[in-house]
Image 1 (cartoon, rainbow, N blue to C red):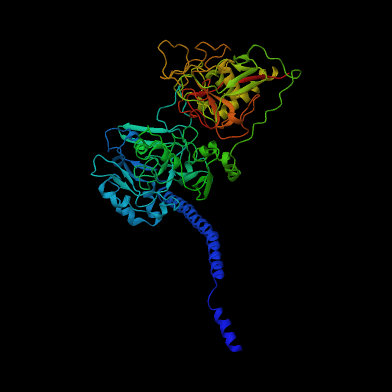
Image 2: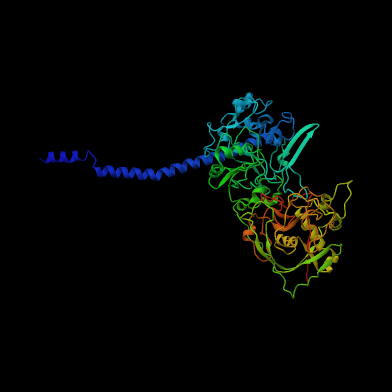
Length: 640
């Protein structure tokens, strides 16, 4: 009887109760709920690491190419004989003019010699002979986080000479073509253009080259020893998103075009500044108008892949990725960084420039990458009325520079022009500024004669003045000077014995002082016209076409403050560091700009965006850059 009972109890344990089954299922569910996010996280982390490793691999291959060829690869080779016109940057026959690009040239150092041999580099990239090779999926060109980089989403370029579209495999990496101004018009009194693009077109011999401030150009290669920016702070390659539709030309590894495998013109002097830029006008691409029609503008916005619908050419493209809140890029030394979408636009601009002096970025580079906004510049305390000397209404100094007193007062800074099609950007609003003390400002821009007199014997004088054989135009404004040289002029002028005896010192005006002087104290909107009226003899030139030539200073009538050429002749350096959204957070009283930055403010009219419907900061330049249409005027301060 006892044994029977034991057997029964033992048998009852062989099956599971409903409670036990439910408990097990609950535990499994909980484990699944906990583990699924972990699995997804691990998978995402693995893909992110693969993206970073690809950048390292590609940059190492680029360095090996440099060792072999004594130069980096060009961004792309474009054929000057493919079309009648030499304006290849405006050609829509991309499949005809484009040949090999940097990625194809790196194939031997990526273990892909056989793939390189499949390309016929004597033929255009769109030729039938290159169909198989250009359609090859390459893992080293793929960031696994980009769901649009797959075989079912090739780029399909419409060609009038082909039976069907010319198809290309996708890619996720681009060479740094630069953050320069992408526009092709030369600088002028209408706009100085900022960091300039270089374009060479010649019929005899037939030649085409285009390059900016990056590490490679079209039909243009550079040696590393030509760069002033250090290898640990200069961008080499960066991420691109694959186009979200077969008509979208972005992210195409074998296509040597802007947006396909080249980033271009995405700095401060554009409307595409910074990574993953979301302005609706960002990225100027071939076929974007059709893309808007097929997908709809809202779809492009939702996918965070904007492009401008009315520009039908590959002219500018920034770095993009699907990593949250930023992009990966490699520096020329092979290191990889994750860059936040909120990076300071000025820093983004100069870290892409091969021309950036090493001292600008070398110290604490990683810390610099974390700064979003610089603190307000701490202005030295102004002397009390008992300590400072009263300023005269007018003054002429020892080198015949004339100054006039600009009165203290309140005005609205950043008031948009009338006749401009759109309002001021949200991060650059009109705002009230109080100038608390009067100041003496030069009635004219510094002339070539005055500059030569102060800077005689300096390297800066030789670089700014006309070359041998070209006459110095004494009364014309000095231009082609860097901001640093303008500051050095102020220092040297202040150190002249006559100026020290008179207790006078000199500096550049702040942006607020400059705008108050230009507006002659008013806050009303300037009546801007894009085209000059035949009867206009004012000399106003900023934002107005056609451009006027540079003229002797004071050739046109002054404004009501007695200041000449505030809206015309040369554009002018100011003292302030540039910060796109400084107007939102700057001081009300005597704002002097942020404490630090990477570009300087250049002004030429009453509004920062004079003549610019797109509200682009075209004039802003780094303090080491020269421009033949940028000069300066100075403030005179008198101590007691």
